[in-house]
Image (cartoon, rainbow, N blue to C red):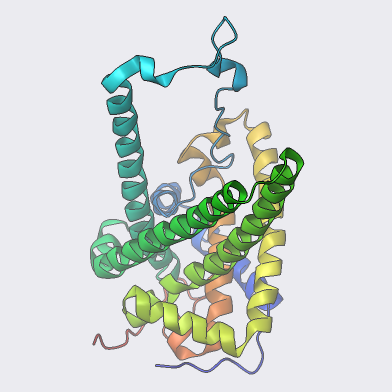
Amino acid sequence: MNPSPSPEIRIMKPFEDGYTIMKSMLFQPFDLTKWFVIGFAAFIAGHFSAGGFPPLNFPGAQAHRRTDGSGLDVHQYGPFFWAMTAGVFLVVLIFIFVFLWIRARGTFVFTDCIVRNRAAIREPWREYRREGNSLFLFLFAAGAIVCLVISGLLVIGFIVASVFHFSADDHVFVLIVLGAFVFVIYMSVVIAFSVISYFMPMVMYRQRCRSMEAFHIVIGLMWRDPGAFTLFGLFGILLVIGFAITASMVTCATCCVAALPYIGTVILLPAFIWLRSFGLLFFRQFGPDCDVWGGADPFSPAPPPPVQAATT
């Protein structure tokens, strides 16, 4: 299925309409229970708090030195050290695995809350189980591939620097050039993949398809109208900056209460719904197959469930 792009793709109109949807959902009428339920949906979709995660403070260089000035010999710990290291790595891997799975499933729950203007967790969690699991496997595989490619580039660079007998200054220059090259590739891949993975759940929600089919559909749309998606990405960067500033101000105003997971999500729920509604409204301009509302009026108090495409 190859949906055709709309002849006129607008940015500001969906942004303004997103505010209307947010206001209708949360303030017409105001329902605190609805806030907490939809806030939980946003939370499991990856919107954790206003402040986000604090930076990880890894030990500095002095923490890896002995008091006598010699280097730290990890071999002194024996098998226990390596077993503990492997255990920590396994725990981190399991955490990432579970985190991605919940976030993939939660994305459909949060989208469903906005599309159907309802506060529900259990029903959409079950209804979009297949799509959520498919998105999780796609994201996990894509992340693993990116890590392998970046690691391979670094390994190749170090091998080249070792085979050719460069001087100390040349080694520094090679590492700087290699680092800059890898960083540019990494950022390009991250930006492109972020845009693609942002719209994939919308296709999967509307057409009830799997992740690879949604991936090809989004790639096709971006290929046909790269200007619209580029403009969306640039405007999205401005929105992210604006949200970061707003979140910081809210965190300070609430004495860091907004930095708490879930609590911060509920406090900033209007922003999360507004931004997500903006993306959904922007994407529906590309045709009926990209309209998560399935042709229904997204501004009605309780729009009907979207018309789903037949599952093949």
